[in-house]
Image 1 (cartoon, rainbow, N blue to C red):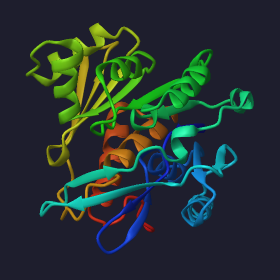
Image 2 (spheres, rainbow, N blue to C red; image 1 turned 120 degrees about the vertical axis):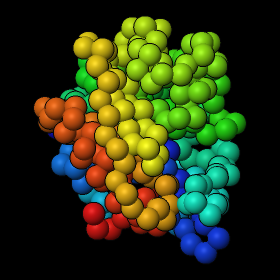
Image 3 (cartoon, rainbow, N blue to C red; image 1 turned 90 degrees about the vertical axis):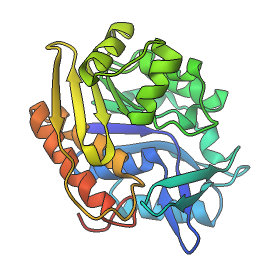
Length: 285
């Protein structure tokens, strides 16, 4: 199967190190590890960080033929600070190479089984236009992992992102945001909350709802059934990239024809290994 991940390549800069990152890159890397033919549509600067990013993507077996090199903008960076529980806060640089992803009509010829995207790369008009063009006549599965990063989103962008996908992945904070700003209804019970979102957005078929150490849910619209898998009990070193790995593994397993229970179990297993490591894309899983 072929999966296209759309969006940012970012170097996560910690106090004592730097790591390759960006939710779409992490997603692409984990999709590749899960057995997909994984492509990333993004952009890097014509700089040392950009060249190193491309080398790493090659090492991770992510196809980079759709990653452009921008000679006018630098490769994206983000300063990451972790609290005592390993929960990250982010300071993301503005106006970098990934804000200017290049659209080539040959993209539609690749025959992708799925396209994945988030909202950070949609903060400027160029990428919103590019993604709209890609999805205009696309017939495969579209997964949106909202991945909200303040202040780079608004209700209009979030509403559009949800309206073009069949599979929506959200966390607790994102569910609260959808409740307050999009659906405008008080959501409490998980099943009722997710059902209400699918009624607001008729295009949705599945909602993946991750709750950190509590576990994860999947709501299936056609059956109105909610699936749940508890999180693995591990020592959490960092939650960076855990959600990306969850979405990538779930989607890859789902496209392979596995049951939702099996997809949930595998995604939970892999994301548990990720939070037990310091890197978003650990060398060994």
